[in-house]
Length: 113
Length: 112
Image (cartoon, rainbow over all chains, first blue to last red; front, side, top):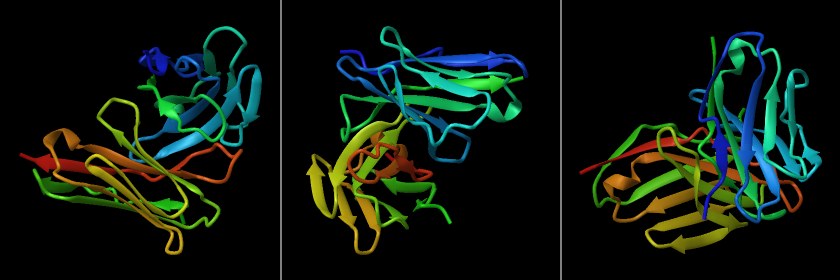
């Protein structure tokens, strides 16, 4: 009974490269959420997706960041042309539907050199 | 001003004591309230999920919500060393608004 699976657990990129973070929701969950956690700060909402649809992207930076949740396969958070300020822990959560508790994965820790 | 305020601690208590963790918030639109536990280098683990005002108990954990004061609490009875972690409060608005707003977390240590 696997929980939310995120990979990679750790990702190192140089400035200007692209970062791709993957999230497989819990079995039976069709709603995915991405959050970012900076040191000494709480988790900040980024984006909410259902299969093939972005429902709420109010927390996504306007440039360089994008997210998708295709019909088949995991959800992907993509960061283009990374900068040092993108260094953070990125967490994915999933739920079986609207108005249901969100369950989190163990995150991807992104470091930018 | 942050929408959700939480004392970062650290908070240290002896094993067996009752722990009280709290958050205050400013947005009266929040309707759903959660507590998560996060161990180092791990993701948040859902402990309690409550709607509107009132109390909810689950084992050694009790969550309280006072919407009139915009104040929520988590009590841990008979605290154990394994309860040592960071505790995050989270909340969201009404049905259809799925975005969670988190406090910064309180770091708790239970001393054997």
